[in-house]
Amino acid sequence: MTDIAVTINGKRRPLAGTETNTTALDWLRANGLSGSKEGCAEGECGACAMLLATPAADGGSTWTAVNACLVPVYALDGQEVVTAEGLGTPESMHPVQEKLAGAGGSQCGYCTPGFACSMAGEYYRADRTAPEQPAECDAEHGPNGFDLHALSGNLCRCTGYRPIRDAAYTLGSPDDEDPLRQRLEQPAPAVVATDVEAGGSRFVRPASLAEALRLLRDEPDALLVAGSTDWGVEVNIRGRRAPFAIAIEQLPELRTLSIDDDRIEIGAALTLSEIEKQLDGAVPLLGELLPQFASRLIRNRATIGGNLGTGSPIGDTPPALLALGARLVLVSADGSGSGSGITEREVELSEYFTGYRQTVRRPGELIRAVRIPLPLAGLTAFHKIAKRRFDDISSVAIAFALDIEDGFVTAARIGLGGVAATPLRAYATEAALVGRPWDLDTVREAAAVLGSEGTPMSDHRASSEYRALMLGNALRKLHSTTSVEPKEVPA
Ligand SMILES: Cc1cc2nc3c(=O)[nH]c(=O)nc-3n(C[C@H](O)[C@H](O)[C@H](O)COP(=O)(O)OP(=O)(O)OC[C@H]3O[C@@H](n4cnc5c(N)ncnc54)[C@H](O)[C@@H]3O)c2cc1C
Ligand code: FES
Ligand code: FES
Image (cartoon, rainbow, N blue to C red; front, side, top):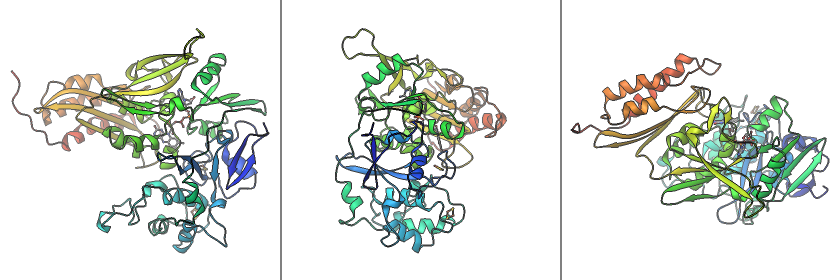
């Protein structure tokens, strides 16, 4: 147990003795690193942001900003972390700290360490490049290529965002002597297996999928933890504790992405940021959805398997994956004792959800991957209706995947979230579209059908009437953005 340790700001620190449900933020603060602040303890404010050394595609590392308030501290065993204290000191400030101070980007300072960490993550992003022409900057990218989305999970209550943006947009590039830049040339720390019992609970990071499944077979009530962006909220806000947690977010078998002729397979433990980067626009519907999912801080940690594992009716990936006709690969331990020790089955996502937060996933099973069949539909769109543009949960989410040939709808798949106890396919609307010309008459009729799909509820996010109205509006909006004119009506 004494070997269990995390490297913080270059210094190895033992984790032994800490209760296993302790968050990284609580542990940091209890160990004197009080630069990391607690604002909300639910991933909404970014005051707790810290940098984690994660693997980069070139074999080196990336400084990835994540919310310390959500991550179980034992998930950091063997890992390398930088907090605001590790960026710079008052005598020798880090460039992001200098810029924040110089631009007046900090008043009470409570949010500042978190902003500095998120900003530093973007400062060190290897593919951050200044646009060739200043005119190419848009509202969310600076002349230095700084992507403002990097700060979308950080809130400031007193300074105002303009000075913070000014600081971000005037940052240069790290110089060759910068130790944190030099560190990125080395691989990220290897994943280590962890098995710790403390304070009456146990946290295990198995070394392989087969081992994880054996544990889950023997302890079917054990909690699977991936990015912990959902589970961390349960711990902090609802006071839940896992007597036995199995960490799966680093299992190599769950972290591959492949694109073949007939399908794309996405490993369940890839984070949404990793998926966005690795797909690089190959699935336009996901390319549209992912930037709207929470904040960069959350996407840097949240996994696609976790989004499906919750069984939530308001998750953002299910509507899009339903429209894409996705299937899930579920795996469990094979009792035969031969071969890989793993049994695999494939389930249509449209048959996965069975009730409110209920799915066909059996005890002892976990999601290994998501499979998207190819070719993709020609016309896709994702409409997320939420109270805020970024960092918010959907009131309603609608994903369209249509094929339109010669002005006629030849195939349609529509996924809905937030309008029933489960995410669902809008089968009646799909039927109202297929074989019809893609024109205003068809769209008006189909929009009326779409508005009556599901059984939307009224809650603090939206009324049932509003939700139903948004469904039809989404289809009208999709039509208004396409200019396909019908040709001849087929005989
Ligand atoms: C501030 C904030 C904003 C958010 N915004 C959004 C949003 O915009 N859209 C949205 O959809 N969600 C949002 N979420 C919810 C959350 O980020 C997502 O659901 C995320 O994808 C969960 O992934 P995770 O890896 O963090 O899951 P975890 O928290 O680790 O796990 C969640 C659940 O899934 C199970 N699980 C995890 N992996 C697997 C697997 N491979 N197989 C089976 N079960 C598994 C776990 O046992 C657990 O029950 C937000 C959360 C926060 C805190
Ligand atoms: S304390 Fe608010 S995001 Fe962590
Ligand atoms: S400086 Fe006070 S909250 Fe941001």
